[in-house]
Amino acid sequence: MTEGMALLTIFVLAAFVGFEVISKVSTTLHTPLMSGANAIHGVILVGAILVAGRADTTGELVVALVAVVLATLNMVGGFVVTDRMLEMFGRGARSARSSSQEKSADGGSGEAA
Amino acid sequence: MRDFAYLVSAVCFILALKGLSSPRTARNGNLVGAGGAVLAVIVVFTTDGLNHILPILVAVAAGTAVGAVVARRVQMTAMPQLVAIFNGVGGGAAALVALLELADTDGGLSLAAAVFSMIVGTVSFSGSMLTFAKLQELMTGRPVIFPGGPFVFGGTLAVAIGLGIVVYVGGGHGMAASAAAVAAVLVSLVVGVLFVLPVGGADVPIVISLLNAFTGLTVAASGYVLSNTLLIVAGTLVGASGTLLTRLMAAAMGRSISSILFGAFTARGPAGAAAGGEARPVRSVGPEDVAILLGYARKVVVVPGYGLAVAQAQHTVRELADLLAARGVTVSYGIHPVAGRMPGHMNVLLAEANVPYDQLVEMDDINPELPYTDVVLVVGANDVVNPAAKTSPGSPIYGMPIIEVGEAGAVVFLKRSMRPGFAGIENELMYDPKTMLLFGDAKESLAKVVAAVKAL
Image (cartoon, rainbow over all chains, first blue to last red; front, side, top):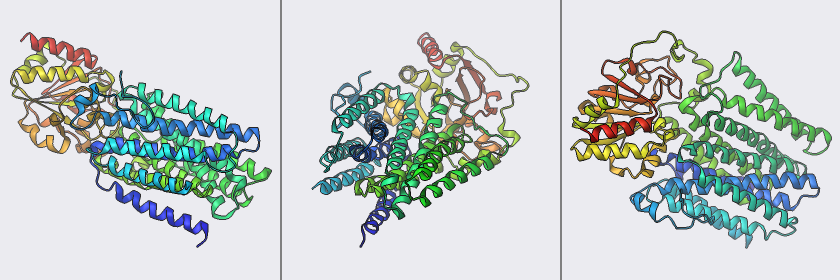
């Protein structure tokens, strides 16, 4: 199997997983789910870093660094904003606000304002 | 080793989406996803032959600082806009990556993927920026339509695709191909704008979801170009789940995706236009009247809308509900799936104000109760209670399920003005004899009603 074919196979299988994994989701969670998925595609940051690391000219580097900043915004902002939405959910909604010192994986602390 | 770490990240993303599909596991799911992303970003730095590490770290730090601060500081009400922006910059980043990789591909499918990523990423970028402008009310939230719109859109799209083919045929490098690539990006910016312009009102979030899926596919294509399996898996996951989510959201509103995207092109029916003509009589009342009505009711349903969110009145409305409950009135909240600006937005806002979860009743469950309800208090909502969705086939919101507040004994609207809602459609219910209107800022009006109830 060529590399291209292997990648294509991964693509097709991932598409099925994507459909299956969220097939049953309540309306209330549509917004956080969209926001979470949005954060996940922020992983383009990996691609941006690879391209920036291989840049040959200053021009290329600048464009690639812009991509790095944009991708980081997408990823970090996406996960943080999703966490804030979900902070409000569920049974512990009331206590979650007062005891919101759990750190998110991005190093941010609980919402204070 | 590196590939193994990428595999772990990919599994984290799958578990994240799975977790996000259930209220109990949602928050942990998101954290697992964030963990996977952090792992992937750390691991990528171990790639051989990576230069410019310092400037890259600075760029990552800058993006992290801005992203985290903005995401943390923004008002809960402005979240949909923020999601739109984050989605847009992701698409933009993917398009830039593809643009830089054009010259380095070895042709064939890889080059095609780069061209696809470049065009679709750019469309996602400009489209998301326009949805931001609409939600932020930097421009009208209504559908913007002009004569020949579909043809202009189709023509621009054809030009973008044509330029993409030129880039592909040119092999992705050399003067001609580079010029065509830049032109394709510029034209794609216009395509994104034209794509979102005709979408209006409550449909905007659905378009964000669709653009989100676009960005996912863009990232997957970039992954193909870079031969990076993690990007392929993550991007495809988002592309697939985003497409499904878009359909679910549209279904929750009783719309089809094609009618959302192209509805405004075709349905320019007279019923869609807000009749700005003659002023019809409405029953405007004071806070004391509302207080008496509510204070002596047996069952009250509050229908919150975006106006409540804008006025930050969620705390005041809970105060009123507590006060009424203390007087023996049964109070619940009727939550339309798209109340606010996004599905589930209102639940988040009310949870923030510590409204007990069991008082939040979804539309399908509240509607059968409304005929037995004495008073419905509509706070800053309009489209989601507009009977035109049931009775007026020409209306842009026709077919959208609504909370049938007209079934209740009396309806009180708290409104800033007679201005129609986000979708710009007149609401007949305002002129119904059993409807009362209390004009003013939602929070101030509620505070006055609270004071008046206390004085009863």
